[in-house]
Image 1 (cartoon, one colour):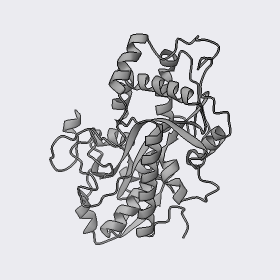
Image 2 (image 1 turned 30 degrees about the vertical axis):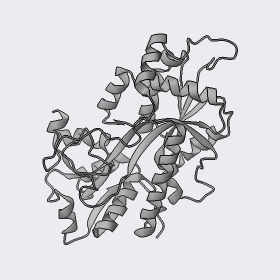
Image 3 (image 1 turned 45 degrees about the horizontal axis):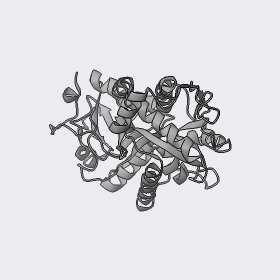
Amino acid sequence: MTPADTPGGRSAPRARPARRLVASMTALGLASALAACGGVTDGGGDSEGFPQEPVRMTVGYDAGGPADVIARALAEGSQDSFGVAMPVENQPGANGALAVKDIAGRDADGYELTLLNASLMTITPLAVSDEEAVSWDEVDVVMSLVQNDYVLIATEDSDIDTLGDMVEAEEPITYGTTGVGTGSQLAQLALFGEAGIDGTEVPFDSGPPALTAVMGGQVEVGTVHIGDAMPQILAGTVKPILIFSEERNEHLPDTPTAAEEGHDIPVTQYSAVGLPAGADDDVVATLQEGFQEIVQTDDWQDFLDSNYLVRAESLGDEVEQEWAELGERYAEFAEEYDIDLGGDD
């Protein structure tokens, strides 16, 4: 089944690739230059060169999860682009905050990186104290990589086919989220609040159990990452109702966005490479060039396609500004609809 044949309800023009955080950098020109010289470093270099040794990537989430998979795919290209290995270590906890705070306390020499999810900077602060939240004073962004969109799903035999069906339901709708303080929770609480839907939240600890709950009838609908849902969508077990990205997702081109249904609620997970704040500009530039080389390869594009991810490449300051704007928007959702992401009564 090709993307144009995937389920999604009503017919629609083929979606354009999502453009939120798409590179403003001159990626094609840089890629050509890198191809000509064979990478940003030959792995040897002079005594002042960077990098001279392996660059560690710490992931604040469990092995096998979306962030871990992205980090390991990126690390596979490290030898070719940087001339050194990039071992990946997992340090799960506190929605990634544990790893980022650990990294923030290390030397900002470019040898300690982390896979940074936008939710840690945009949503987690709405659910935890200021002391527990990660601030931009602690970490800088090298570059953003991908977006991983959330899709609202129901079982294939459900009477719910559209958002309108949910609005018109006579009984409260049970809905599954991927956990407290997640984009899945925020997206659904904002949607239910804005659309006036009466619902009962059932939180799970990640996407797979939330998906299983929808499939097993424990909840009527749920919001999970497209990568979690697509195998079951393609198998005809579940169906997409709407997606929370700003534009239609290229992997589900027939599925409307929440905005198309009248509710402008763009809640998407972005992933980027981060490092301790205060790194030397030359080190950051070398990292950016190397990662840009990796994301221009066919292997990287194949990885994105097989995991239903969308390109979202921008550099440091631009990423921080856009994520900060998202955080402000999410805070407005929380205030307007009296959303409590901390799980308190």
